[in-house]
Structures are given as structure tokens and as C-alpha cells.
View 1: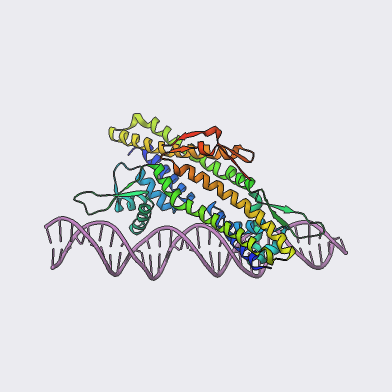
View 2: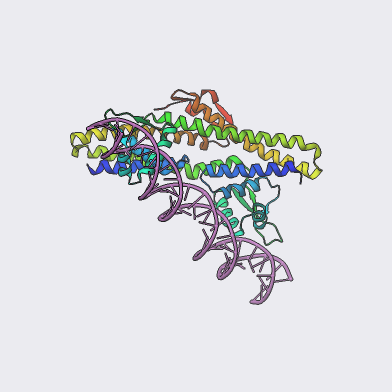
Length: 178
Length: 178
DNA sequence: CCCATCGTTCAAAACGTTTTGAATGTGCGC
DNA sequence: GCGCACATTCAAAACGTTTTGAACGATGGG
């Protein structure tokens, strides 16, 4: 194969691996996904293992993760016992899957915890000494900052997720920060 | 100290640690930052070490990281030999620091590499066999998808970063995806 | 129904990262 | 300047994560 093709393939696979790390996945998952992205044909576990020079066991486990994340789909080849995988090639669908099932939860959990903290501080106010009450006020202030950050993240996420392939910024024309 | 205050403090510190992990920092850095955020007074290295129950050495190194990232500032206390630190409490300033000096580079690097790949494939076109040329076309297609993702990320970043504390979505009223 | 071929599992090993604490460096107050 | 109280450094250890490969399990073809 021509040098340019292998060079491009290598750097793309490496880059997707890096991207995967950034999104909190293992690098191997990213490399597998990148490899599949650049393959016009579905690939078997053995193809992937030998292509990336990693063990078959690792490929097996990581591919199941990719499948659960909606990043790869099994492809049935008739007259074949091997499992074949193809990348979910609608990249934006993948992004939305991830944002929806992970980041969204994360943000909601954070907002929930912050809300509980505020509530807890307000409920306890009566039982606090003057000094403690002052500290509580300080806490409320700082926690408010955290809240506004997560609220912004929430809006940003919902803006991307609510769409059907288009990001619509009309709904959030101007968001105040701080 | 009242139970509610310590409970809120603990969960906030833990939460900021989690947030730090998400942003690719060490959890300890996040916990240190969270501790400082909730402290009305600047804290010494010893205060932090005993508060979080980690070694003084770790505190020293991690605080310097926080300082480099603009997340904490040294506070000089006259008549004191200790170093005191306070959190940079403008949370949005911190976010902008991080996005600006890390994520921005990351996105630009990615776009650069992708551009090089496209160029390389185009330059090599003449030397390719029919089959190779077909594969190259396929590569260009997939790489184009990656490009559009990173371009979106770039616009999103610049939208947040360009502002002076306000996110202005007017410039990007509607972005096509895919 | 058995064999061959593949997929899956998981314990051990390899690996990378983080933490520690002792040794060393530094600078302020006297 | 000296000494002391602190900060910094870094090699070793602890720790968590990832990878491997061999054992086991499943499944389709003959």
C-alpha cells in the first residue's frame, strides 16, 4: 500500500485514540474505533488484533464497550462464524450518544448535590453560631458559582442534544456568566 | 464545627476533585482547589496537607501546578515565613484559562494534523493505483467528518473565550453539523 | 455429535501514575 | 551571617489501570 495511505491511517488512528482519552475512554477503544472508521469493510476481531498489535482478549472486551456506547455495530456476514464490526460512521450520532448518556448524568448529579448542599446549609442556619453562620454564607456564595457553571454546562449540552443533527443556538442567544 | 458545614465542605471538595479529573487534572489538584475555594482565609501548605491528609511534598508540587494554571495565587502574609495560597475565586476566569491554554491548542493541533493528512492524500493521488485511489477517497470522506467536528469545537471554544465574562451566541446563530 | 474455530473471561504480569518521606535547598528574623 | 522553620525535590514504594495469554465456553459445519 502507498506510503501516504498508511501514514494518514496511522496518524488518524493515533488522533482518534487521543480524542478517546480526552473523552475519558481508554486509548485502545479510540484506536479500535479509528481503525474501523478508516475501513471500508467490516473487520473481524482477529483483523483488529493483528492490525493494532494488541491481544485478542483486549479487542474482545474493548469492542463490547464500543458496542455499548453505540460507537460500533456488529455486522453479520453470512457463511461466516467470525464476528465483524463496523464503526458507527455518523460521527455526530456518536457524540450525541456519549454526551447524552454520560456528560448529562454527570452534570445533573453535580447540580443535585449542589442543591442538596444549599438546602442543608439553609436548614441548619438556626443551629449555627455567629461565626458558623458567616462561614455558611461564604459557602453559599462559592457553591453558587459552581452552580452557575454547571447550569451553563447543562444548557450547552441540551443545546447540542436537543437537535436532530443541527446545533441551534437561537434558544440561548445570550447567557450571562458569573 | 457544625455537622452541616463539614458535610457540605466534604462533598464540595470531593465534587471539585471529580471535576478536576474530568478536565484531565489530578484529583488532588481539584481537592486542593476546592479546599481553597471554601476557605475565607488563605491557607498554608501545612494547613492544606493536614486538612486533606496528604503529604506536604504532594501539596507543594500540586500547588505549583495550580499556580501555573492560574487557579491559585500566593498570598503574602507579613511577618510569616509560610507560603499562603488562596483560590482564584473568579471561577470563569479559571475556566477560560484552562480552555485557552489547553483545549485550544489541542483543537488547533488536531485541525493541523487533519489538514496535513488531506494534503498528503491529494498530493499522492497521481501515484496511486485505482484501488488505492478509491481508499484515499474513502479516507478523505471520514477525515472530513473529523474536521467538521473539530471545527465545531473550535467555534464553540472561541465563542466562550472571546467574551469578557459573557457568552455571546450571536456570532454563531446556527451551525450546521455533519 | 464431535471437531475446529472462534469468542470470552479472568488471574497474573506489566505498566504508568501518584504518593510518600527523607534529604536537600532556601530565605526570613534575629 | 546563623539558625531555624519552612519549601522543594526526587527516588522508592504503593497504587490503580491495562494488557496479556491460557483456560474455558460457545457455535456452526461436517
